Length: 169
Image 1 (cartoon, helix red, strand yellow):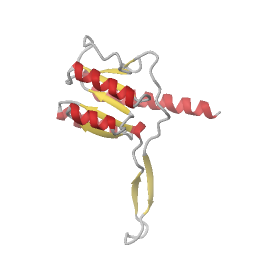
Image 2 (tube, rainbow, N blue to C red):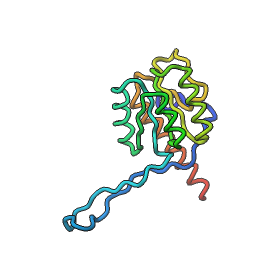
Image 3 (cartoon, rainbow, N blue to C red):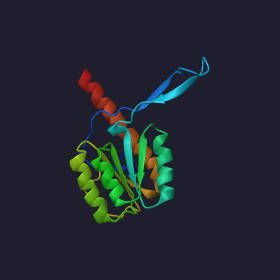
């Protein structure tokens, strides 16, 4: 249990995660001298969250919270769109809402595991009694939704940073 978030024992650890944000660089060309503009690096698969829900308000709130800690977010509200994104290699994190039928969630989680073996699956559960996917790495309660998702992602980043640093030493 990490900050109210249930983590599956033996959780798969994805490849090293790097936040895909760069600082600023000097503007070139016709820009005003001395002014800078932010440059973002290309999002990596490990810093991309595929957020799947039928609730547009939940998608919006989750995206805001997740982007605030440096992740890129792809929002989808259909099984077809989720499947497409997974097959295109958006393999960092799969975030599945309790509004998605269990059979659909299970099938997408299975596809995600095959396509993205190092990826993280987070399930937002409506309540403690909801049966979560057996493939889920973390289960967060809907009542603590965005805060729990952020804590889970930060914990995930911390584990990857620690394991990456220990491999270098």
